[in-house]
Image (cartoon, rainbow, N blue to C red; front, side, top):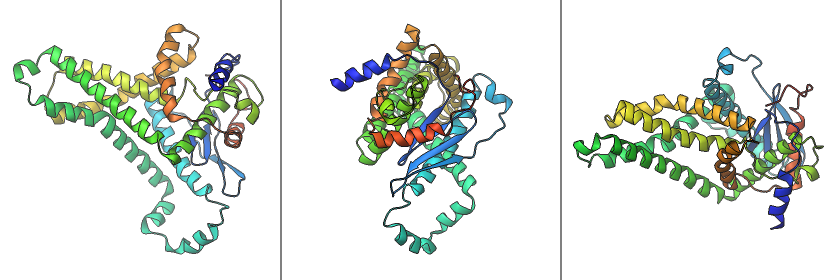
Length: 337
């Protein structure tokens, strides 16, 4: 009860700015992405904090500023960078542990895959991100449609081809998609290793909130803030799920239902549109979070963070602060949302 009261008080603290700085939880660490730099901070096995700057493309293409297109590009670039940071954090977190000497001795016995990965690091990171996208699209977007189409085979054509049935089937598909997503989050939140990552996710949110409130970035100050943040990737994923129901339902009504293969291909083609629209909605809600309607829209994403964040301790907050301090721009206006 006291924890809830503290969260409510911290939510009412004055917000000086909304920052574009965002982050991602890593293995024993946090990555922060600023307007000029991307840095990771990882707690090593010996207890020290390792801070390292990740490569960031200085050049911003024209399309990254075009509404409804920029969201897909930024999502992909963040996924590639995040995958690389996650893998790097796994290695750094092992450094300084007593078993390190044994691992060094076994260094010569690297598998072929390990050697290829080291030789073509950037290529392998990109491929890992692409594979991650394919799996996510397959499980959360395509599998529900395949299930619905399989069941729809038993509906007679006269009924199947009506608008009402098309809308109903798309709503069922959307329900399955959200069910799969919830199931994934709930199962993941039960794993101890994942819970550890969620604590770093909570520390990332708290640190950003503390920075936005203009308070000094100390573990004591950061701990006062709630672990929920309205401009989180979890909120983006929920918006994607909701928008996908709307767009796929409209597509079903306008284009009609076809074979299972065509329906699946149509959903793949519409994925960039869904991501683009979802990004613009998240951006709009983030800019107008004082508006009652926008606060209402952000509530599902905030609620989902119950499953993707955990309360961190002071030592975890130290890591998030180290990552944040490394990306804060010299010009305070450079990271305004």
